[in-house]
Amino acid sequence: MADDKITTAPKQEEISIFHSGINSTDPQKRIEAIQKLAKHPRAEIAEVLASKCATEHEADPNVRIAAIEALGGMEEFVNLNPIRVALIGDSAKEVRISAAHALASIGTEECIPYLVTALDDPEKEVSIAATVALGELGNKDTISSLADFANKHGGDELLFNAARHAIERISDRQLQSIEGTVPTKVSQNQTQEKKRLQKT
Image 1: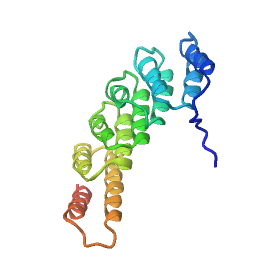
Image 2: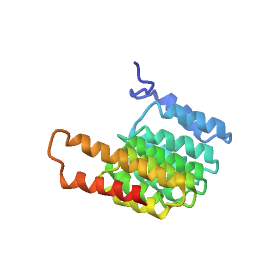
Image 3: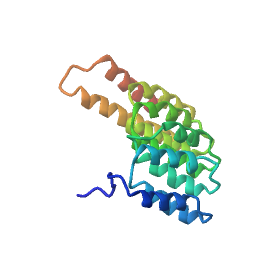
Image 4: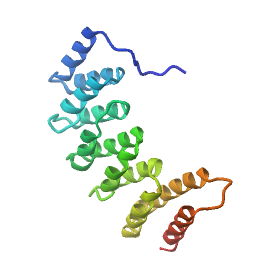
């Protein structure tokens, strides 16, 4: 199946058109320009999206969302800091949710501490997005943070179940990685964490 990303460098006149679109007064045209730029993942394009579109210097949250989604697909070039700032500080919860999804797409260990911080977001939807992302890319060190989060929100079925599911996903990955060997102390600790949650 052909990848819809175009990794070859676009012609300079195309870049000029895209940049012109980003500076348009019409938010929809800015979004369209971002989507075009996202098909040409390069360091300089990631920098343009991060500096001009992903922060609250851009007034329209839908444009910020488009930029963050684009950055999430440029893991080879992207600087995580603009996404981190959006995740923990953007005034629109939809942007913070998109930032959590983008970090999950990038999928590096450097993303994990930012997502752990986002567990305490005042909006439930953001906390759940961070929890789901941690389930996708968290490691054994993430489990205790998720367990604490689950215990803190034991009275909220959605939050509790999201955290428990994330722990199970991480634990399953850890167990698969040692399949066919004697269980290690790490896997035993993970099992104990799961049992502790089930008793809560």
